[in-house]
Image (cartoon, rainbow, N blue to C red; front, side, top):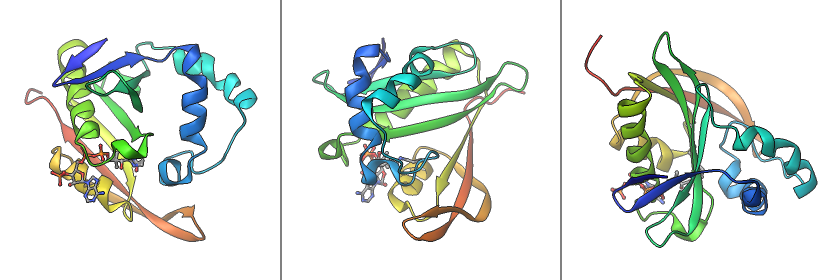
Length: 174
Ligand SMILES: CC(C)(COP(=O)(O)OP(=O)(O)OC[C@H]1O[C@@H](n2cnc3c(N)ncnc32)[C@H](O)[C@@H]1OP(=O)(O)O)[C@@H](O)C(=O)NCCC(=O)NCCS
């Protein structure tokens, strides 16, 4: 388990299936995420679980626990490249009553620290829908810069939305 500033990151277990399915079926949580809002059954979710529990040198996924060890969200690093030392970030807080308490920021800092100290990553990339202002603000506060934009890239809730590309160098070296 990764511990940092009263937030804990733990690898996903098969028994987390109901929780992950609940979050996946929540429009508010999933509409701005890469996969979009597409409700699925627990049976279908089961097909994804082998991938979700597989933490390896390319993809690492964790459940976020709050200070009372409640499972509240998800964070992951994808496409980790040992050559370029880059990766992509995915993050959400699935329990909406836990929004606005600083948990996502703490979870990100925990994973950034781990990425730096154990994975030797130098830059983290992410994509975020421009209209998802809370998330954009959060990433800017966490030190990410906007480095590009795909116009009208995603169809969400009846409209095409712009997708921002953000990046953060987490190490100063070459
Ligand atoms: C976006 C999300 C991850 C934020 O999680 P969170 O734990 O509430 O975020 P934090 O409490 O750490 O907030 C960090 C900063 O984000 C911004 N922010 C987050 N929620 C906000 C809100 N409701 N209103 C305004 N600003 C907000 C603020 O700048 C905040 O800093 P501040 O509290 O010092 O003002 C969460 O709302 C979520 O999971 N949303 C659905 C999924 C999603 O959009 N994921 C990101 C996609 S790339």
